[in-house]
Amino acid sequence: MKLTSQTNYAVRMLMFCDSKNERATVKEIAAFYSLPERFLFNILQRLTAAHLVETTRGRGGGIRLARPADQIRLGDVVRTIEENFEMAECFEAGGTDCPLINTCGLNKALSEALQSFFESLNRYSIADLTGNEYNIDVLMRLNLAMKDPIRDEAR
Image (cartoon, rainbow, N blue to C red; front, side, top):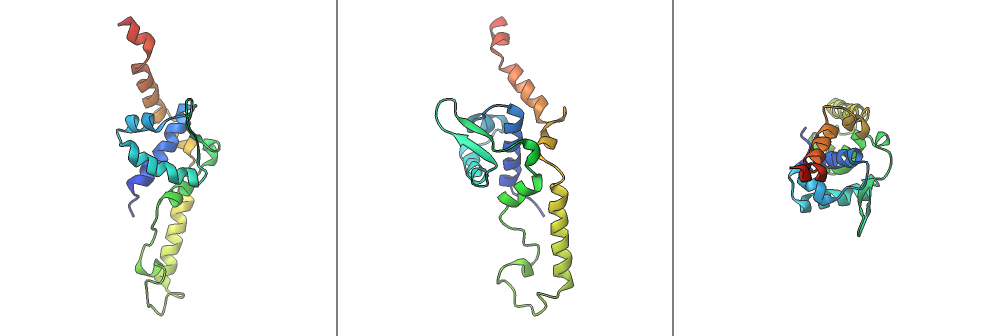
């Protein structure tokens, strides 16, 4: 199974918002990850609809987490953004004529595997992904230090 780039960057948007500790903008996030703003706006719509982030328009507006980062589970984010978890034809709604659909051992095994996948991801929160010195916090501090106006004046 491969997650889409939308899911990848949805998680990264949430990580960015958590690490920023104030409202973030799509422009900032796009620059940080070198992505088109339009791509992030599409993801932002889904994150907002799922009540994972809140947005405010206008001066001083931006994006912030809708609840504390330690309450946003990774598996829930993946389930929200990904559109398809059909691991086999028999998972598709109305997509099979198999007479064993309700009693198939393969169907049961794949369903259990998918459930385990989400349970494993849900052991992690967005806070777990950002509070580490080897993660986004270090990069954001470096990025901010490189844009520090005091350092720029001293040059």
